[in-house]
Image (cartoon, rainbow, N blue to C red; front, side, top):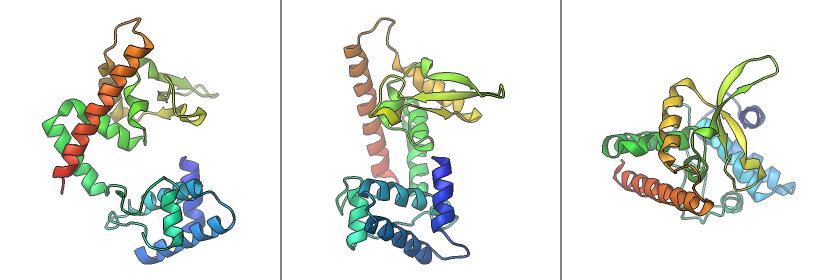
Length: 214
């Protein structure tokens, strides 16, 4: 994923530039890809990868893609989005939501942070226990801690992946993974029920914090 973002950034983004020029370049890239037969889902993914890069620039966190026009509609349709559906949350607002969750319901704070930092689906994270946290050794003998996403099952084959864990995030992962709290020998039905409970609980907490965030 990182290599893809780097490649797209080099191909599409030009510097020095302004927000408007970068959006124009991004939309032109999307228009050309769609005209060349690119799938809307692929174009949507590329567009929001590039937008996430641009929004990391100081002062550009509020950037958004246009809503009007055939290209904009095609991009949004790639995620099954209607024109009036919620856009990605600006970084400043997301940090404010995390702060509210940490203050009001700290038990949910680790999961809320990890979902954002590692681009995980709620069920991918909340369905796992400590078995999903392990060390991976490369061909040179270097060991690193990874989170095995979708170890217990994912949306598709591509869901299963090893995500290197930053040192400061290890306590957060351990807090979330020990929270599954199922006894040894629990059935798949009990597991699925517990995961749904965790996802609903976190979603409710996040929505409440989002409604209060500036």
